[in-house]
Amino acid sequence: QVQLVESGGGLVQAGESLRLSCAASGSIFSIATMGWYRQAPGSQRDLVATITSDGGTNYADSVRGRFTISRDDAKTTAFLQMNSLKPEDTAVYYCKAVLFGLKVYWGQGTQVTVSS
Image (cartoon, rainbow, N blue to C red):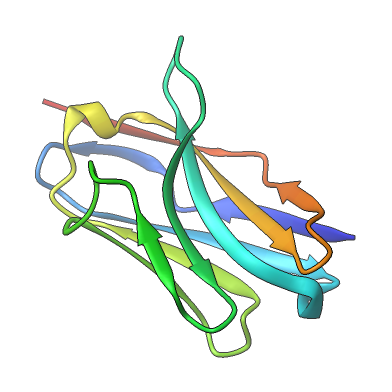
């Protein structure tokens, strides 16, 4: 079992920055990949960025160069540094953990709102 708790969302103006955190607890040594996804109203949940246990990263084209995903040394917390935010980045951001056994866990989500 893995529990994920996101934090760091909020309301910002276009061009500003936010840093999201996802704290994992439970069977953290079973986590292979952590990632951030987002879902805007009326839309599907889309990939934002992922990071593997050995530090490999992957980004959606829409955020590459603006967002950076990272993990702490203990690999218990994943971060999403979001710079140059745009109104179209407005969404609920969810943290996802995929275990080595391919079981998937989701956090409860954190709202990010970017005003123009």
